[in-house]
Length: 64
Image (cartoon, rainbow, N blue to C red; front, side):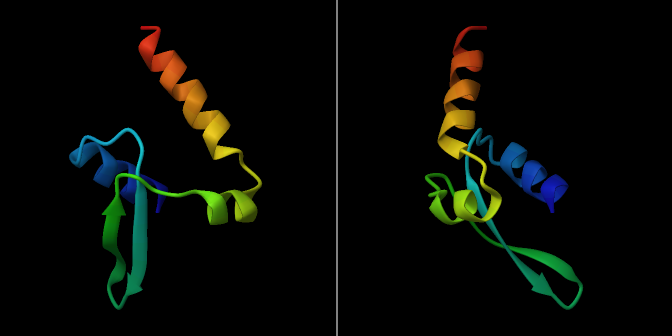
């Protein structure tokens, strides 16, 4: 799933997005891609502070 999500984001040239994946008969299927994704549910499930990680990413990218 991670590799599929990264490939989709790269194809769409998105640094940050939410990718909805469904499980089809022949494997995973991309349902939709949100360029302005919310991360509340993800943070609750993973205990990862997405806002902090994304802010660090932006600072790193702009410092280059």
